[in-house]
Amino acid sequence: MSARRFTSEAKLQDRPVFADGVLVAEKDLSYESGARAYHTLRRHLDSTTPGVVSGFAVTLNAADANKIDVAIGTGYAPNGAYINLELAQTALTMASPSPTKNYVYAVHTETQDEPRAHESDGVSPNTRAVAGVRLRIYTKAQFAALPASSDDLSVGARDRMLLLAE
Image: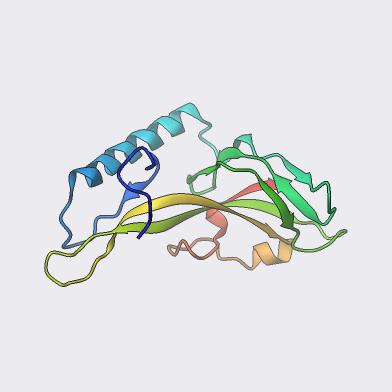
């Protein structure tokens, strides 16, 4: 089980997952209302179009010219997903060495968390989806081979990817 609990550690952009047969608790409703308020406010405060809102500076790594560094940043993927990189990432390996053009993307992800017992069938489905981000570097051909969209958030899909640099 994850160490994250219903405390100040839970982020407002995390949302509950209402599994059939699992009792809805007060914290689930708190996640739901907090997530809705958070996303409504973010969309009004930030640009309504996909793209980088702030940060995400991409630079060559000082120690290795075949690696890059990405600064913290926020933005929106084409599908409207909010992407927030809270820690700078360093020494990311390029998809292909120069002179091939590399494309740096921030990808919206969600992980399932907080399993809770079902009231009658003995399983413990997850009851919260935790928003996250991962950085990926692709060549043009690799990016073109990705699906345009997917309901499976473990699969990289172009509609959840925010272009940071090329």
